[in-house]
Image (tube, rainbow, N blue to C red; front, side, top):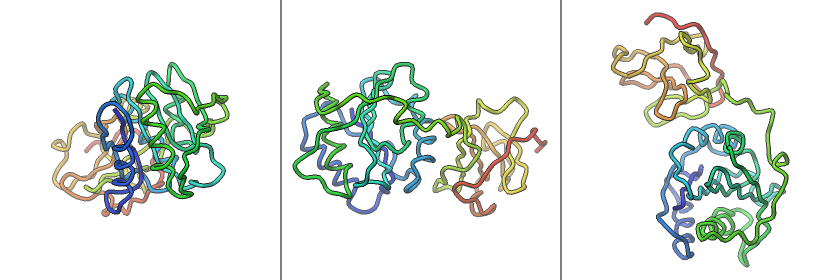
Length: 246
């Protein structure tokens, strides 16, 4: 099984080209579109978002991750083996929390190069063939490297900022709900938000925060667009505060 996690978007040819390349390669299992609207050019925000999905990734799967503004530059291509799963993509921090939260971990630089390697599309020409190869259990073309050389220790375990805006106008933060003590909620842009478990607890068009389905704290408006109402932008800071009454 190969899972795709990219910032390509669902328009244009890029996802199709990468899947077409995978279709012509020998690998086992389906190719699944996990996410194609990861934060554009933002490996750090995407790393927190990807980490929230780790519990859903089955053993022996290969995740092909492409959020790669440095494609064609000096950043290394990596293959990471973490807890019986493989992650293939750029060395830019995208897999920081995959590595940090793994119990078993090995990191490899991809030293193999295909005959055709576009300077701007390593997802199709380099990462897709390696993902297919790893599905077959073939580790050729990989060179072990020091784990620390691929890490970003300055990034916090939980990021008190907005990392993703969805099509409903909800704002996902880099804070795991488990990092908030009981009785705490969030403040954003000077506005203190009540914390609920479900949308139905909130009044019509009431803004609140809650633990979303992947375990991250999220800001929402019941049947409305919290992002537009509060003028929320990616990277906007959030603050942990004692929970207010609704």
